[in-house]
Amino acid sequence: MAAPAYTPLATNPFTGGFPSSNEASAVASSAASFGLGYLQKLREERLSSLRPAGEFFDKNRFSMPTGFANVTSRFNYNLTYFQGNYLLMFLAITAYSLITNLLLMFSVAFAVGGMYFINRIPPEGIRIGSNTYQAGQLKTILIGISVLLFFFSSTIGTVFWIVGASAVTILGHAAVMQEGVEGEFASVV
Image (cartoon, rainbow, N blue to C red; front, side, top):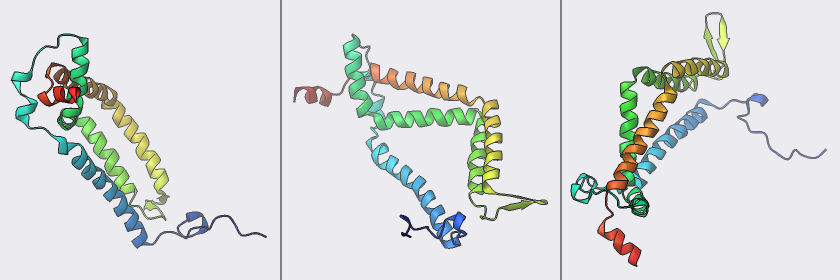
């Protein structure tokens, strides 16, 4: 009989092996560092291109576009030139919508906090009363409760409001802001 094409890992729960507490904490810390790494990458790549507020709100460069070609050229220039500022505007609009919709903020905190605590449950489960619940069962309960909370907190309406408010604000700014002098030189070269 030939050897199997794969080697079972010691952390496979179906073979009876579970990760040690050191291995489990390493996995949890790598997941946390993934989130922090993503935020650090976002800050370095996107937010490093923030333009000064004086340049972003320069009222001498605001003017109505003369035609569709002018609008598209302004979009092409401003959306790349001010992308860090536009990302900050989007994040501010999102934060505003969460702050003004307290039930939605509670729903997000409940779902994220619930997943955080469920991921900390040991493999043998948790005992509540005379019943033992596994992490998968608790995740199903959490998803059911979270769906109801998100439904009653008008999540879909809030998402559409964020998209609409961001589109009007960002595209409106990009349309009325004239291209910088460096944009005209880039098209010549």
